[in-house]
Amino acid sequence: MSSSSSSQLTCFIAAEHSAERSLLRRQLEKRKITCFSLDRVATVSGPTVSVHALIQRSDFVVGILSSNITPNVVFEL
Image (cartoon, rainbow, N blue to C red; front, side):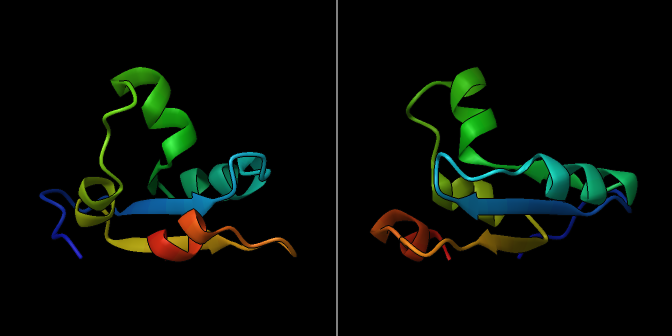
C-alpha cells in the first residue's frame, strides 16, 4: 500500500478485460478516489505498464470477479 502524497485516495481495479468497470469507477470517483486499471492505463502508457507498479501506487485494490476467473486476475488480487 502506498501513502498518497495528498489526501486523495487511489484504487487499483483488478478485473477481466471484458468486465464492466464504469459503475464502480463512477462511484469511487464521486468519493474523490482516483482509479487505476490495466484497461485504461495500457492504452495510455503502452503494453509495458506493470501491474505491480500500479498496485504499489494504490491505497487499496478492488477485484471484480466473474464466474470464469482467469489466472491473471487471481495474480493481480
